[in-house]
Image (cartoon, rainbow, N blue to C red; front, side, top):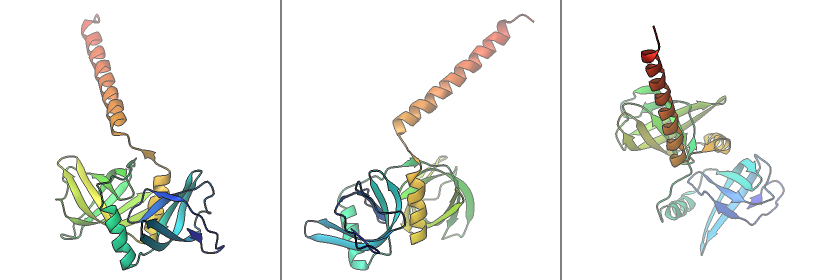
Length: 216
């Protein structure tokens, strides 16, 4: 990877590769918002594009890709389709405006979690799988916009959506949000929520018993 302004070159491993960017593991990351040229090699295949450093951590930096040329886009899609993958999901509750691009119907809902590739939107009436939507999420004074498609619908719970088109500024907003959120651990979440539910239930039963047996 090369920093455009200084021509400084770094050779490092990448992780969390997606259509929109990647994480570069290095103990000497570039400054946030630095413009970079990145090359990712896998055997004889080399993916090349330009991007910007969206966030910096002690173990590396998150890079958001600029518009990727068609040839490199095809290579990236081929890499990503090799095996099923699941982006890390982060607990993320924020208002989301969902517009069905077919019916033009709009509704304001809330997200439950967020990842580099999509999010889960809470609603009692999810749209059918394959629906194309425009999604706008507001959080921490910023607004994120993406064209997305519904890939999973859970009746009376919500729908999973996958981002299919983002502008560079929206990719940067997404990476910034993800850098500051908490990773979702489904097992731990269910244990905590379940534990709280049973504690509240036990407290309610105790209060009811006390009211019944207490002298009038």
